[in-house]
Length: 289
Image (cartoon, rainbow, N blue to C red; front, side):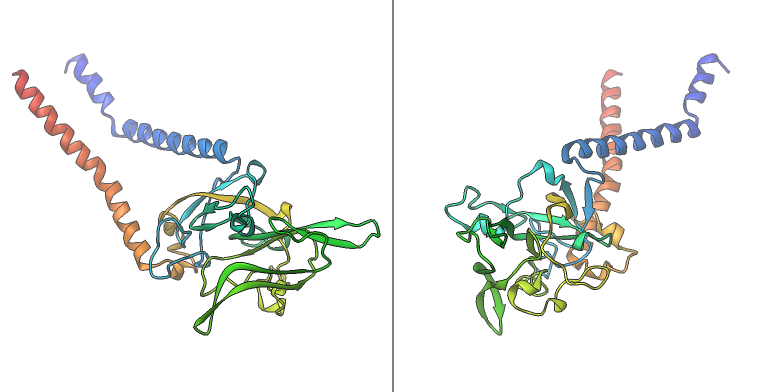
């Protein structure tokens, strides 16, 4: 056996090939995660959507909206100015017309009452800010509206609600906030919508709304409870994580179908590329001969 044959055999060692491919794959993953970390200022830079509370169309996993099984990039809240639904709907506001994930306003990821249970990814509807008057009595401003120095918040928002076949607008009724923060809700009109997370703000019993891990009604979302702001979405891929979880039933059939086609494409692409490359190589070699 010649020296060149020995070298070729050593170069074609399957163990070495496997280690090389594994290191390349790990390096690529680390490069992608590092790039996303730098771009978003967050780690982890992505979250998997586990429920259908943000769906716009309950029949399929539509693009542009946040559906169960989607991966969502999360921006550091210190890097962006959070725009609420109310601000984006106000014609005189500089953020008028701003949309994110299919509706006006930003979608935020927050911890319920600052707790440690699973964070919520919902749309910021409005933000109240506390004022301390000269008399020491606390009053409130609602950003993006004409409400200033009010003792309680009464506001009708151009946010359509479906009720017994008719529609009406979301109303905040005699709400005295516990502190400054955001009112939030999911986009899904069937499960969330006008049933906002801070249900007491609509004049209803807050115990019927969203609760934290201790069973307490969720209050206005403080700035420090905001984990991030939803940026771009990567559809369907996160459904892989949900497949073995107790939330897999939220994933639509359309999402499972799209995920299956995506996986099939990823698996077949190298084989198709290799087949085309080898065919072109044979043609090139035959032409040389």
